[in-house]
Length: 449
Ligand SMILES: Cc1cc2nc3c(=O)[nH]c(=O)nc-3n(C[C@H](O)[C@H](O)[C@H](O)COP(=O)(O)OP(=O)(O)OC[C@H]3O[C@@H](n4cnc5c(N)ncnc54)[C@H](O)[C@@H]3O)c2cc1C
Image (tube, rainbow, N blue to C red; front, side, top):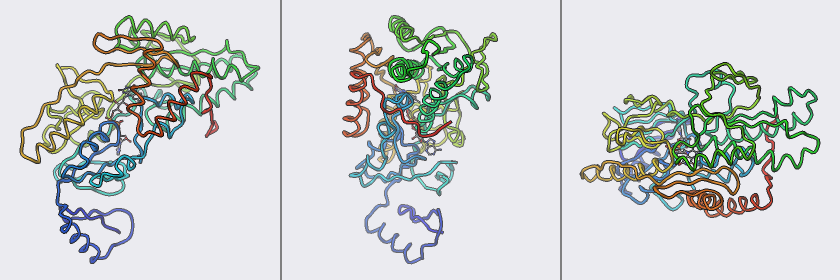
């Protein structure tokens, strides 16, 4: 068994394999003292928007930081739909965590899945060992919420991770190959029916992008198929899509989607799906092999191990300082946290996570130096959604924009948030190329049905 030294506490954790001898451990302790690194240790769980932002804010400060994530990359989730529809490739929306902190010696990375927390002993338990902390930031994000519908969870496609969006891409491309060989008209229609559930930005963007992929790209290449057999549906339980937008922009989005031959169904609730038949409340049934679920999220399950009060979506109900109730050295931010502003929980969106990361880091620094802690308050930065290549809606305060200008703004905002110059250049070139040529050369099947 080998041991990993925690210099600030002169204690060890064990993980994987062999034994390091006592001499090695002694040397490590001496080195730790010589380097004077008995500094507060901050553990950040999750290398998403909140976690990376917090680590960047802690870089160069008098603390040692370890980011734990079950993936070695930061994922830009807002563009998952573009991977699922063959616009972008996997490495264009994911960035290695260590690469962010090449020059930041006080930031380290630990690849592992957190399975439990021990706030009494100030330990985080992972499948690759245990780590001690002085301060903990839980930024572990969210997972798909099927609202208790097990059949839907079993058969629908979620879109929360890179693998899930690649699975959707493979499925759509495979389905087309299958449909092109299918001689039975009824089965072909079933194969060519694509359903997105959830009228928020993800569902709207996915439905619009599937429509473009099919009618602008596939239609030019599957010479013997009848594209009037294709049916794309967007299903929304309430009476509106993009609920955060003003009515004029919601209407615009509806009109654009319908223009793209997307059958938008409002006030329609999914009750069941067995992989072949999607059943709505009221008994209506749609035969389809493809249901993409973008209807809700809940906190990742490990968050409940903190033993703190949770909301209905499993998120920790944090204090105004973003601390977890009962654990003054533990903070929860982003999609793992429920922060009540004017008695309403904030949305699970990236700007909430990044703004919370800033205040949470300030509070940790203040806590170390004995200063009073700050309260968090979210500053609305507006919202936007693409409805297709060259078309978007955008809303901030009194500013509303739609069409090509909103799409340009959407591109700028997303490029600013993407990691790395190389990625930015690649992505902007691809977007422009797709816009001008209508091409989607990322249509690579990496797994067959
Ligand atoms: C398809 C999609 C589209 C979206 N579009 C937008 C958009 O357009 N605009 C917007 O503002 N927001 C959008 N969001 C929401 C936004 O991505 C999230 O609000 C944001 O990522 C939350 O940041 P976070 O740091 O809380 O969590 P995340 O960014 O989800 O990061 C959580 C991290 O924790 C890691 N993790 C989870 N569990 C464990 C564990 N047990 N052990 C170790 N590591 C773990 C994960 O691997 C991940 O890296 C979208 C989300 C999705 C899924």
